[in-house]
Amino acid sequence: MFDQGAGNPLLIIPGLQGRWEWMRPVLTRLSRHYRVISYSLCGDIGAGMKMDPALGFDVFARQVDDVLERAGVERAAILGISYGGAIAVRYAALHPDRVTALILANTPGPGWSPDRRQARYMASPWLTFPEFCVTATRRLGRELRRGLPDWPSRVGFTLGQLVNVVTAPAVPGLMARRARMLQETELASDCARITAPTLVITGGEDLDLVVPVSSSKEYLRLIPQAAYASMDETGHLGSLTQPDRFTGIVKEFLAGHS
Image: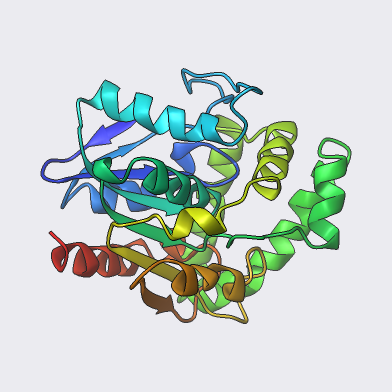
């Protein structure tokens, strides 16, 4: 569990890979301005909670409650990155009294379905994992060339990700299980129940090859008065490749809804 900084609490929910360590650059930047709390999704090593088939996708909402209680926090702004945004939507709908603001970054929209490549990974996560790693490197190469200014920064970022792979490894089978749970979850009706001020952040439409920007923008239609910010020249990893810029967007939004 990550708990650092002082001030208003900001809970950050990680993406499909499930580990908070992968978000360390943006966590540390944001912790200069807020009390930042993050954690690993249930089922992962160190998460402190197992997957409960009886709860389905709501196991993640149960875990958010558990994390907030362990941190001694009654109400917090919640920022969900990618898959974590879907968890944040569910939680904000179920517990509006505990969410002061909602931020969704590169989040798959209601009705998301995997493309052909993603469906193949979900069907055979361990067998296709080597292919997943190779194609992920190719897909993200274009984003890194646009989002990072020079070769040293690109190499540094890539090495940092390799360190995460070794020290905080994602579990392919668990990732596939989470993706299937999201596919089976109805989030559209949840959106209408959200009362917290909401910000949707995406990368450029030509650079996010993981979650289509059009899918993330569905939240603008479904969540009352949701605001929007675009990080052009980034794709799915804008919060990591440009953490200072991302932090600025989050700060501006939260300052207007304190």
